[in-house]
Image 1 (tube, helix red, strand yellow):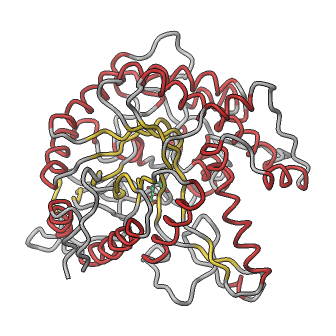
Image 2 (cartoon, helix red, strand yellow; image 1 turned 180 degrees about the vertical axis):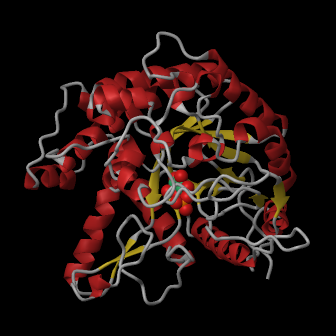
Length: 479
Ligand code: BG6
């Protein structure tokens, strides 16, 4: 499959997030993060939506981020494996609460800063470029308690201080940055996406869009600071992408598909074009939302437009205005999609649509005319270790192969694409379910949903598959 050679300098690699990999959740002075309050099990979804029972971890609950796969202490071993696969880039996130444990200290936490210094040095030793996300689903809990997180404008200033601190510290080491991971997640899982916890009687929509405005300002200020402090860096936004298909050619379905896409595009329109689109202003009016903005905000947004569009793609989505069709929703998809009868699903109910990857990339490129960076894509499945100690994950190879082939098509269609960092190159905690069982890696980690296991790393069959893909620059995807 595929005889297409990807562009020279294409950044092949993988992507992880601090809270899903590092563990060491209070080590070396780190403060508690919002994500450290997400247990496994049935309460998780409701907390991610903003029903937060407590701002300290509760007895009797298991919190997978607290230890995760202990990347904090295993990163050297893991980096050697990434290097063996030939990685050109590794996407990681910085945990804000490692740098400013309560978000408001006068000086940053040196031990936290040193950890990322060492991590980036280890990457650079192997010529692996750090691709760094400033906020991947984490907010210091102290800021959630004191300000209600991103609903408060104070967060903009605190985030600016944090971003300037890390730009200044890592300016010689990291040249690819991203502001907020899956910024549109704020509308679907507001506590996960933006640390928003709600009380009885809160006007949730109003709070969400006010918080979105603050994140957009913070993103713009971070972009500006990055350009000033690291002139040779590129900084992007990050969208949880996957275009909506209308279920039928009924114009009502088509229109609804457009509206659903705009719910997500809204963020990127502001981050990429530097102003609120007309349809967003109408949406605020129609829903009686009154977003507080200061006179200087328009200029901040205008001056802080991103260099590239980072996005995750797992599947397309489908929408219908027909109540009968809407009875058949896909499970596991936070974006609310009806089942697409043409497409298969993963064990976790996520739709599998390689062609949708090409469609989504083309639509994003047509819309923004900026380079794209695929910073997440992958297949979550439960793997079995054979008695011989092998993991034969042909299903993962199949998913990735078909997606990388479509990515090659998108490049041939004219999309400029900087790189591809597949999600979870080593097994890490699942964001949506908190499980270890939902694995994405080329490297298996011996740890289960209850936190038991030796943490031993085992190469899966997909390890050598991806190594060949990278070595052939995408030309050799296997049969
Ligand atoms: C994205 C997130 O939503 O999808 C990641 O940016 C997440 O943090 C990934 O892990 C896969 O989702 P899940 O729920 O299978 O881990």
